[in-house]
Image 1 (cartoon, rainbow, N blue to C red):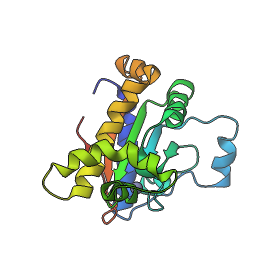
Image 2 (cartoon, helix red, strand yellow):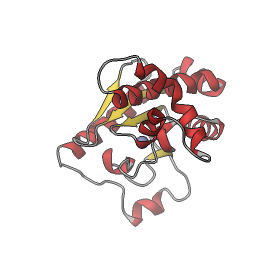
Image 3 (cartoon, rainbow, N blue to C red):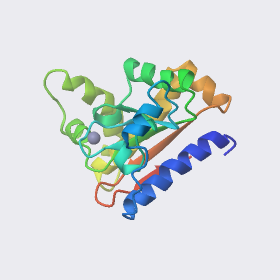
Image 4 (cartoon, helix red, strand yellow):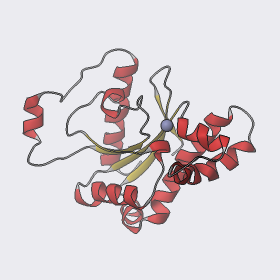
Length: 194
Ligand SMILES: [Zn+2]
């Protein structure tokens, strides 16, 4: 990888996850002193686009703390204009070198999309996940798992195709967009290609 800042950020995330998985958490940067130290200016080392699911506590599974991660959470870790705006802010204003799009095992939003229709505004979420679900129906193996992984990859593509700011930063190697899958049972985050 040519982008050494992104490489360093990804290593910090994966090292933190390894500590979490192996029960060797340090729980860094969780004091009031840390909160005060970053109160006037934040310099998160990575951005994460993850699911709103109650089991997706990013600072816990990556063993970090206050001021470390710029986190956007939305059911199904999908992407719309507001999510894009948030991530563009992280990249362009906060200069984060890495965006990790993170899907997870047993995602309820993906399961709902596989089941079909939903009332109210939930329909919009399901629409966003639908391309991954349609693809997964044609595959062998666990359909939810296939759809979760496909959805993450779709969102990574969508971030670059929908945002000239993010795409430009990727091309200049100021930014890397990575894909990950969080196993709820083991706690482990697995990187998906790239
Ligand atoms: Zn989910």
